[in-house]
Image (cartoon, rainbow, N blue to C red; front, side, top):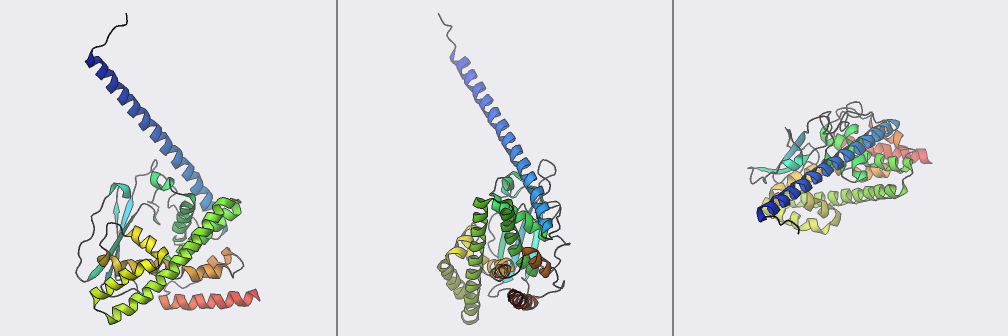
Amino acid sequence: MAQQRHPWQLAKLAILGLLALSFSSCTLARRDDSARLEENARLVEEVKAFGKTLGIEPTEALSRTTQERPTLSMLWLWMQRVGTLALSVPVDIRMAIGFSTAKEDLELEQVYRVDGYSVYYRQGNEFADSRSVATVGFAGEGIVRRVKVILHEDLHGEKNFDLPWEVEESIVTPLGSLAAVEFFRRNGDQETLQRALASVEEERQYARELNAVVAEAEKLFKIEPIEEAKTQVLNLIPSYPVYHQYFKRQTVGQHLPTVLEAKLSHDLAYYRYFDQIAALSEKVADLVTLIDDFKKLPHDTSQDGMQAYLQQLKTQYSQSAK
């Protein structure tokens, strides 16, 4: 006859079984995280070596993982006077705050009120600094975004560009995306190449829609009371589906009337010239030449100077193509 166990013995066995299962799951998760970080480290090394062939000098950003160095995340804030946009001058106030933890571990409440200013904030684990390490979250993202980010942050290195922030971002953002396309093209990875090409096309449409929204917002801020103008611009944004999709996702948890001017000004810094620079890449002989030509910009280039230089390159490349 089989020996019967007392209820307390059965409960003890069940608890031990659950603990063993939990321990096993944690061990497997750690192994998965470790494998993911190792795969990402190999990708970072490969992408940085590739970037050098385009004239992008590599930096230490993202070259280490959380297994090697402590995690550091950043909180970026942009502040723009209400009823204004950073069109020909820099954003009024921008700042960055570092935290010794991943952004996923730092939950923020929304900004409720800053008298006289619109405020937009963004968190990130990836930035142009040797203290930026690859996290498990970053290693788990899609390969197109990872390659784009690695090249983007390297382009920010002083050996590549040392320009006013809003000018540098407007150059680095499209060049990083275009360089990512070239990476997959050279690798012969047709499926991922098509995704990278589609991503660039989406960014170009985003840039066109952003510029259209900004043009409308500029008019409204001149003729309407500020609060009414804000309402009209926010009601207008859904008419631009690609921009609206990003705007909605990137402002989750933030108060939209508070965010508006700062968010539009932030987006201009990154995407104002994206479509124009992508169009130049179609006219120039190769991406190496395009990157090299942008490196010739003076360190004190203004927004007006940037626009004039884009026109100069367009004329130059058009004549060379004849």
